Length: 107
Image 1 (tube, rainbow, N blue to C red):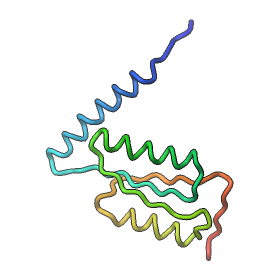
Image 2 (cartoon, rainbow, N blue to C red):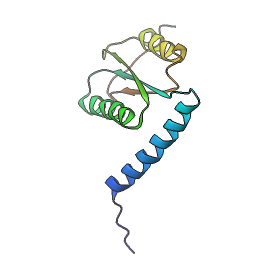
Image 3 (spheres, rainbow, N blue to C red):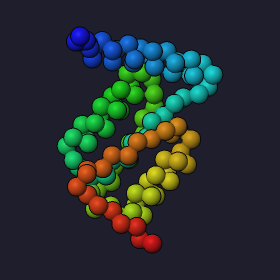
Image 4 (cartoon, helix red, strand yellow):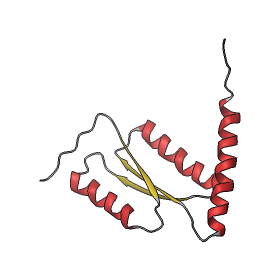
């Protein structure tokens, strides 16, 4: 048996549900915020991150974007993560990095 999934319809339903939940949080003074940390300029990663920020805007979530160059050091990345962790507007974050890049700890 084959089941055909309407991805656009499912995405719209998920976003509508999420927008309601975000609205309920805002009524209690809680504004969710998604931080992204993009390391490098991989076109696919850049598109993914841009999509996350567009999705946030669509459902009422604050978005915080941090971009670092591909040659960012471990310390640079750790500092950006620390900044997101310390930012009260950022209630969660995702990190995107091109698979071909490598970072070594300075320790």
